[in-house]
Length: 267
Ligand SMILES: [Zn+2]
Image (cartoon, rainbow, N blue to C red; front, side):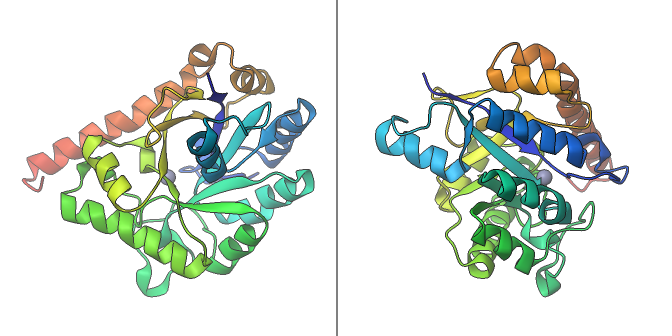
């Protein structure tokens, strides 16, 4: 069986704002986590590389200890904090970018970015350093709550903008908040993505749907002990209980919002 830990990061910052803080990782903790991967002989690859390898020859060309490092949303601190560490270690990674949040999105601006985001030129620079740029919707909505036409727009506009601005094919994406449904995954495939990442805090294995690859949340409260046990594949469900609660927290917020919308007669 193929088992590949796919790590999910958000902001890498010393001073995250209250909204990004629960999922932010301190730059020194990030550097320590990545050095651990290097020392323990893990070989990082991008999500597209992972999927291509599994698709091409059932993963036989995968390195002995594969790991995938991903970043959601596209915070500017990816460029200032994460990229230098990745470059120093020679690690590729995948950044899932919300196109409407890009700092110089201009007329394409959409949604409400949670912090200072990457510019297009910073994203291009990252891509030129071996970073895969993947999709993360255009405005970061809960995709499973959208009607078909808006769902398609979110996926296709994001993919087209990224491909236009970065100048490379965009083959993978991650669901905002990790949410998907059969309908969402069908549209993701129709939009031309080969693979998509969810959250779910489990190690990805070949039994998983390539359109719902589970990832391990690395967050503010992730100690080195938790990190090492997670990537080594022992006790994952237990160690990640705190983050699982956090994931459930999103669901509660979502239900509440949905409830409110219904009360107002908008849903
Ligand atoms: Zn996100």
